Image 1 (tube, one colour):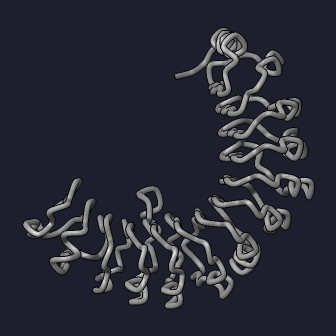
Image 2 (cartoon, rainbow, N blue to C red; image 1 turned 45 degrees about the vertical axis):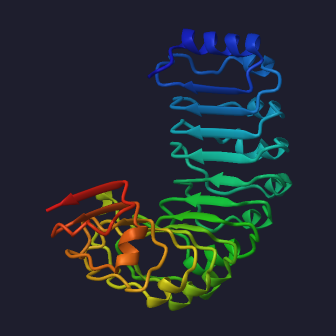
Length: 314
């Protein structure tokens, strides 16, 4: 729902009165070209979410030094904010994504964000991977969509983040073929890989079986990019040696015809619109599944005693 200027002012006033620690404002109903500076009167504000403002947001937002979470999405510009983000020394979550006047680079001053755990820079227009990201050693989650940077450069930097557990990376071009670089294997703490809508990714390396903390692998080719046929046609058998793997998303991988056979703990499986028309699992594998989405022949679900959600297109 759009927030009019009056609603925005009312929400800020109420947040001041209630000493709120969280505030969310949507600007697509605003006709003004500025934010009320009364935002600075919300003492102790910890979480601020601003979306859909059709003007450049002011740098004085970084005067709210109590912030632990700042999310700005689909807004005209964050050009005034990016150089001053370092002032938010308590920041744990930062999302600057899908903004219209995209970021080209990050300042070295961001190295002062010692507590930052989650960083989302989706659609940032980087030509080189920002060196300062490697200094954010508390980072546990990183997301960058529509990336066009050389893969080796990206993973060489990410491999220097010892706490990185969740990675979302998307290249939306259909060519050239992409192969993960050697530095990919140095993501020792990684638990979730989200490489969805990355049609030019040709394969996962066999050594992925050494990444024993992995719980989630998402390779789904989203409907938005399904026209760019995904190149991945097989998965390494070493995936079955991952002791903690619980979720596998293979949506839209049309050239993928079969699964590796030895999964032991898989709880969630999505093979909708993939090349897998018939699912053959052991009794133990069926019993483990809690979520299944697929197309093709209707499987015998008598052994799937723990299945909680099931979707099939015949």
